[in-house]
Length: 392
Image 1 (cartoon, rainbow, N blue to C red):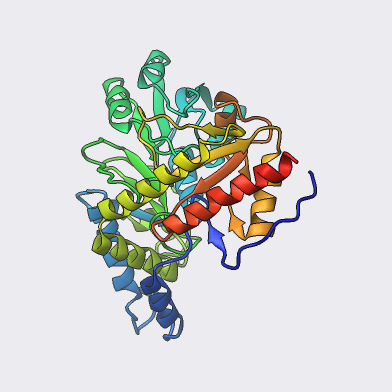
Image 2 (cartoon, rainbow, N blue to C red):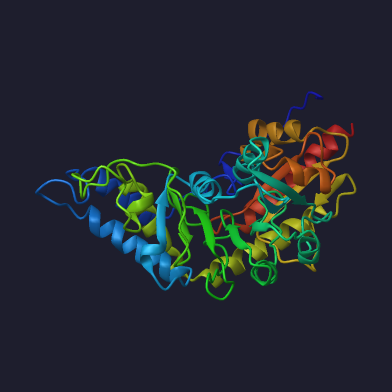
């Protein structure tokens, strides 16, 4: 890496919201601080009950309504999307059946599936995406076998921001008697999701990205009538005399002490989204994204990934500066300019083969409702300066 002496900005600019959102709404910070100062008491455990049970119940209902689930009991809380996806994937009895997924998937999907494949429990087909990160539903349909049991798809790529046509893929899945699992880690809270309209069997999500919650909380929606094998068993606070996991939903899947403060943070984050309006949030982020693209595409030294107006995108942009390591670019941005991005493969290695950013990946800029147009302009000016310095 060439030594570069650059003038740094004073304020931190945070462009890594696909990893975790920052800042959180002030309501989230205020509420969880107050909760931490209150007397702790486990939900449904002991003679005295705090409002923890109410928090869990209300959040479950709120999320159910948000994704249009008719039953709030179908919302299961987990430690995050990784646990939710593990529950969804490992909770199904495959008997060496065939599974279809895509190259856009996060390792939270790929690694469980590859583990099952290695153990000879499934046969796996991975559908490549195009150079823009889009998975053609027809390519999925062409790979369906007589024993294909599950189709699992990433709703929105955490690398390119490309949104997949889950409605069409769902139609293909159910026409062929397949379960349809959606990883909504990047999309929930950013765009509308209707589990009924899209006929989703399992929807997995996290709370610390576009729902503005804390890290360590997430969950999944499980369609009525679908039964998974629990990922863990243990205490539930009720029926302690019964030596097997109680089969009532949702406690069947929720053994152990609930992450009440995480659940609360997700609730307050969702309250903020509903109060502000998901369309208002999306519109601002889209404008920030468009401004970012317009600024970067002027530089011939810049390679943009996944930018195609034919596809729906969230406010995630991946780029490289030609002949410069993305790790070096991200390092310069952070340590010389206080601009935080993310470089590398972003825990989604296969998509980089298809969009041609292997082996080092790219620099990812992922935006939040709390970012500003001034920050976008500063970033574009910074990239211009970096390119200028590198060309000397």
